[in-house]
Image (tube, rainbow, N blue to C red; front, side, top):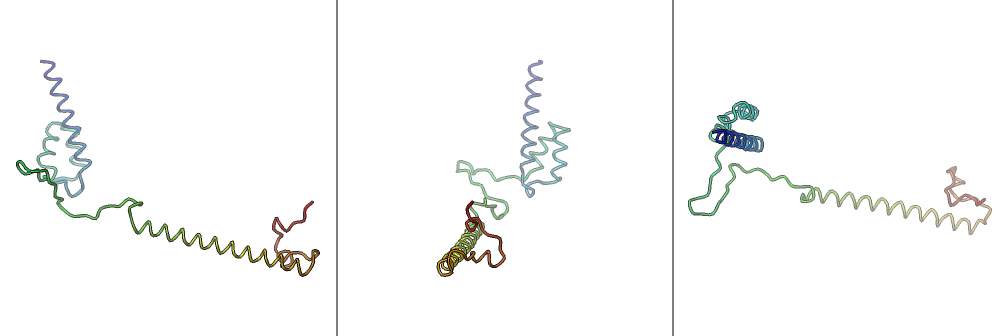
Length: 150
């Protein structure tokens, strides 16, 4: 007799756990009669009756497979599917655009630096080695490569 009670207790606990999982994972539109919090409390405080009530009255019935036919699921309402960031074309386009802008900015800075260095070299060649570079003449602090070696 004790084994029967233990078996019924285990079955009740399994039923309550399944009902809780079903209740907590159900979409908001699939819950009927009471709010989700009320269903969770009912299942927790009255495990056997609450679990049975949840499966009978608490969730919206999902149409089952036709007799002898393949299982076919039809959604009760259409919702836009949430896309992962790597599947979202707008997100991917924004990343590509940001990367392209960053590359253009970096390239522009490199070109400006190259022009400035070429201009400094030309001035050194025409003015002679004693004339300081342009940056030092304009009041800017000298760059590392403009400093004399010690």
